[in-house]
Image 1: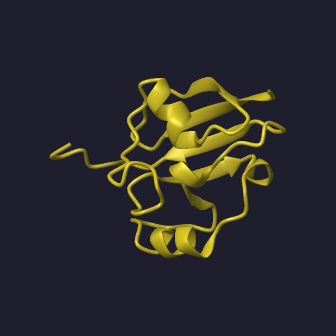
Image 2: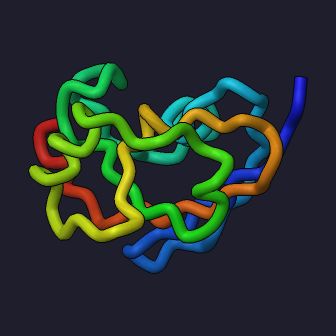
Length: 109
């Protein structure tokens, strides 16, 4: 299996973190497996917008955005042209990926 790195940047100013990702893993999976807090209220099934992230580099290594994902991104706080849902960003194993996690509200989680 192909392995790439995902670098997580944090809007709250926390230090960057880089972790390996195996082809077929999602950004959400890699975050959770490495104790990086990334909300996922729907359980990572593209049923909400809580795992909203910004893809800073490596967009070509991710699957094309679906209509369903695009609908949920429209509901996210501060969506941008590089917005994706972490649960839908499944690495293909060809290119390193850089993600920014926006500030999140973990109240009640």
